[in-house]
Amino acid sequence: AAVQNELEKRKIALEQLHSNIETLKRMMTTPEDLDSIKILDEKFTELNDHWSIMKQANDIRTENLLLTQACANTFWSEHGEISSFLNNISKQLSQIRPRSTSRDHIEHEREKFNQVIDDFSNNETKFKEILEQHGSILLTLVGNNPEEA
Image 1 (cartoon, one colour):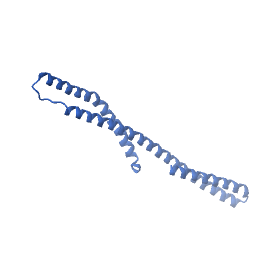
Image 2 (cartoon, rainbow, N blue to C red; image 1 turned 90 degrees about the vertical axis):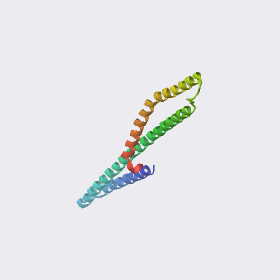
Image 3 (cartoon, helix red, strand yellow; image 1 turned 30 degrees about the horizontal axis):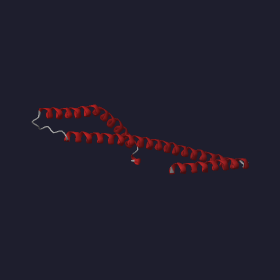
């Protein structure tokens, strides 16, 4: 926001400079004066071009920062979901008691274990895609904007 505000101030100053040059044009009549005005016009055009370049660079920077922030938010949100899921899987695995003399108990524990495997398998592909997609986008955005990282 500070850069944007500074750019706006500079644009106002450029507009004032242009207005002053136009006023001088109407007042000057000698060839030497007109040559000076022409040089001022050229310098003004150069300054305006530089301002446009800075404005464009700031707009791109702002867009990249917003994209990076959105991607990072999505990545960490999905990362949190994955962590919760894996913690839940770990908890379920720790509750499975594989040793028993009861056939029914062993079968029940096997069903719990198979359910954990199914839950993990059902989510594994989804989570891999999320991590690969958002992780690589985030790395690309950060890599393209090292001064912002």
